[in-house]
Length: 394
Image (cartoon, rainbow, N blue to C red; front, top):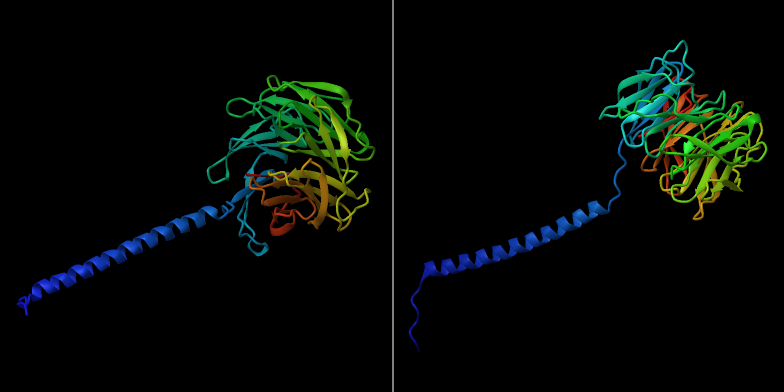
């Protein structure tokens, strides 16, 4: 037999410690690898989740209170947890509002000014979404519709009483100057003036007995309007085109019918002239007769769904009519949603998930959640304490 190696307890212990250390290192490395995989998977999970809807604000001018009402809406709001209403004094009876496309400014119009007093204001918003200042001004008339052209250089207004359109230049601070353009066809009850998405044309619908739809070319460098031929499209008798929504990518214009209660779908030629394509009816079918009257019309930002408010001044037939927009820009009626008393103005949130509606009769601002199929789910209803007609959200 060979000689036996001498015993070395320290060396044996060191060997065992080294082995243990190596094993621990292997385990730590494996754990790090696992954690990296988990972290990557978790990051992927968060990236894949849809972004949560941020809080947005609804703004509505009050005539009775001579104030701008502001409501902060959160997706978690419910009927039992209605948000408070913030009132900012305007100094005049506001009726109509539009939001500046890119700046935190709101434009509010009221009735025609008395004795040269203010009848409009530029409301500037703070970082918290609340009004920060009110810059009063005087415009030529009171307007039932305000819009801002796509260059953000002009403010357009339509006067319901006279049917006139006035156009004002905006200075660097966003304040309107002296009237620089417009149109007057000596026909009352004009209800809307809105430049097309390409900023080349403007249409002015008239309701009731003054049933008409005037079409103009718009000069975005001067703010001037030039009549097209024919000037009046000649809408169907008794339709009463009122408000317009434009498809963002197709040459389609959708007009709510105040008297007809449906939607007039027009196709726009390259020269701006409109041609009537269809007049889809709402669901459930409603008879076009007083005391029913159509009001506002809005399109979701993704152009998948369109909504129209129908007012019942003498009953419980108030409705938010709904339509699916087809690939070619047509409309397919969807089941409508019963509304609060006399739904009037409407606005869709920037993410397309919420619809705010003013209710003239019930003096409420109601917010609905819009699902992927165009169905509406009531989210919350706020006591606005006034017969508000118009609303914007941002």
